[in-house]
Length: 408
Image 1: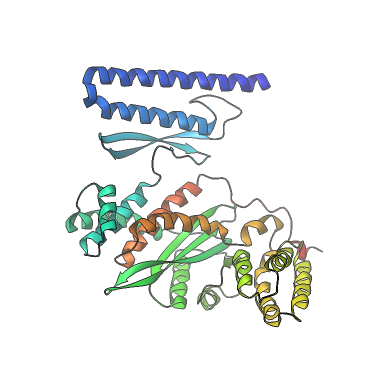
Image 2: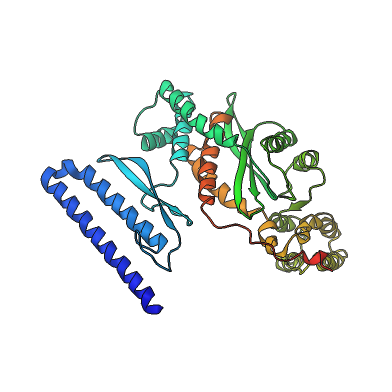
């Protein structure tokens, strides 16, 4: 069997060498025949072949190769135009099935790139530019943008993004919610705008981004409207809601999902602990005590350890003890669900990557001229991440046991 694996790897390396050789020969022919005028076509050949080789490496199998090491399958190509200093390149971006892959030579996400350009262009047109915005505009767009050009680009992009935001949903077993804030300009002032994100986990253990919403309204009204929209689009079957203790969310979820249990994010609870530690209490010791509660074998044991923790700190830090007794039980709901699911459901860390990716794009724009501009960029980023998630393996393993706290 080892020899078979070795032969498979050797065959793949030989094919890659042949591809590289043919690629270089084609490039040299172009340069010899057309000089530097053929450089654009030469770059196209180099990039397209390099992306094919990179895909084969990601799949651990050459094209049409039968290999026991194969991790996924080639799934055609997606056309992409790329502007460079030597001209516009016509590329064929390799796609895969069964494994996440995107060529390292390209910036991931054409939709979010277009949305970012549109957001910056809107600032430029509406007179809220700075030197930095103009510099970024020139770097990304390569030209001055007129209001009519912005309008045409925005209409085409918004049709695609709106269709995704309004798509039908189905059964969602677990609902994860989070909020972040971005700066927008309203009436000559800069204010914080709430960006709500919902992620769902289906009964077959796969995660999907359900929706995104932007609003300046009151926290409860915004959350209530967001949750109502998810239900109107067909979301049903929610068994658990996971979130931090966001302002207004409790009233909104109680109104829209009465009776559905709530798991408060343990990560944020642990961070809140440090805000309630009085002088003289060791942060590392208190943190270790709380971790012991989180890592208990079942709910009964977690409640026992929490009781000991409250009793320990009540004489020396009564306010801390009262905070523990009131808030920590909200982070124990996860013990009522399958053991195999708890690690993923105890926090909203699954949304942290989304927030980092959104922040990476929004910090380029720095300031948005209106709510629609922010919604456009956030939707484009999330839409691309969701498409990537659809190629990944299931997020939650199949539950094979009942919660330890409910076993007889």
